[in-house]
Each structure stands twice: as C-alpha cells, then as structure tokens.
Length: 294
Image 1 (cartoon, rainbow, N blue to C red):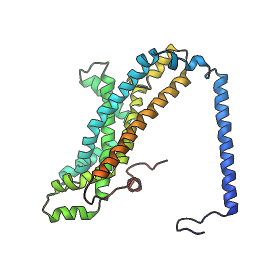
Image 2: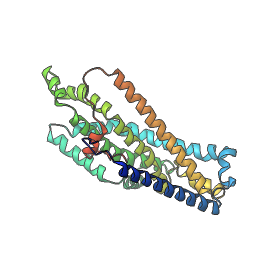
Image 3: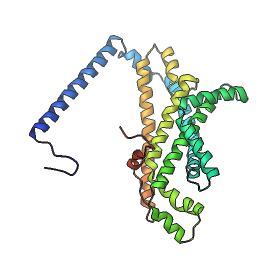
Image 4: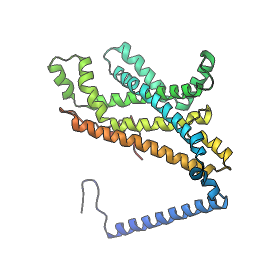
C-alpha cells in the first residue's frame, strides 16, 4: 500500500524492523546490566547508600527541601520577570519605528547569543564590584539576572514569531473597525499568540528551572543540585543515590509545571471566543525559534 508520505513496509522490511527492535532491546538490556553490575561492584547499590532518604528525615529537612525551595524561588522570580519583559521585547521588534525596533533587536540578539552561564558570571562579578548586596544572597541575584536576560530574549523571539504567524486577516479586521496598531496588538494579536504558543513558552520555563543548577555549580548558589555536595559529605559518599533522588525531584517539578500549563492551555482554549488562529510548535521549530523535540 502506498501513502502520500511513505510506502508501507513489505514482509521483509517488517521482519528487519522486528529484528532491529530485538537487537536494540538486547543491547539496552546488556548496557543496563553492565551499569548495575558496575555500581554493585563499587558498593553503590548497598542499602547504606539509599536508606538515609527513607529513614533519616534530616536529609530532607536540612538539604533537599531547602535546596528545592531555592530552585523554585530562583526559577519563579526569573519567570515573573522574564515573561513580561520578553513579551515587551518581542513587541518592540515589530515596531514600525526604527528607533525602537533596531536597539531592541540588538539587545535580543546579543543576549540570545550569550551562554546563560556566562551571563550569570558577569552578573555575579558586577554585583561584587558595583553593589552592596550581601555575599550570602549574591548568588541568587546573579542566577536570576542571567536567567532573565537570556530567557527574556528567547521568549521575545517566540512571541515575535507567533505574532507574525497569525493570519493577516486578524490585523485587517482590526484595522477595518478602526483599531490602532497598539490596540490591535494588545487586544487581538498578542492574546492569540500567547495562547497558541503556550507549549513553547512552557518548554522555555522548564529550561529556566533546570538552568538554576548552573548557579549551584559555579557560584555556590544553594539550589537543589548543590545539595549533592553536602549530602555526600555527611552520608558516606552516596553520590549515585543522591543524584538519582535529585533527578527524580527535578523530573517531578517539571512534570507539575507542564501538567499545570497543559491544564491552563486547555481551559483557555475552551473558554476562548472568536476566530483566533492556532500557532503550532512545529511552525516555531521550522522558523528556528525553538529547538525541535527530540
């Protein structure tokens, strides 16, 4: 049977696909066996390495939960600032006035091209040299600054691409009833673009949560991943167990974020009235604004 996109595999092709699947699963099982056996040889699977996370509440109250709170706090502050700032920059790039569009575009392109870790390091050093911020909260300020500058620029491109992807009839209809460009952007285009691009925006919010770990790696920010050092120092070098638990906490945190965003998106779409266009993530990927899904 022939399809527009591909030819349906025949008996030989189906047999090869089954063989490839079996071989892949076998290789995967061997790799998992090798990893587990190596961990067992290194005594990383013994109960002493894992039991503190079940039997000792101090590992949670002293290290993991405070670290999780610092991660959530840094990510939350960054999101609250980066979202409206990114929307403003994205709208600024669409301005008809060159004196607005050109400098805004330069700012967006500059910070979007900078590694977020480098922005954090620059911010930290700037706070050291030019501010009186106390040293114990300086890493938080540096992490938030780097996350805001980078992610606001990325969000600006997402918003700009989303607005440009909306049907031209939306703007034409607004002009026909006498709406100015600012009113068209505020009441017609931007709400539709934000609603349609919510999955892409949520993907960027997940990046913000994960990138807080960069501050713990080099700036001493006491976020979730940073607590690995203290836990392994106090509970017998259980690095593998600690990193596994921290990974699970990151997965749960991001799962809650994406689940809430999915619920919010469906609620907005159900309650939305009018003829709003939908901008798919594939359109943003095709434009190079966001990375393609793996």
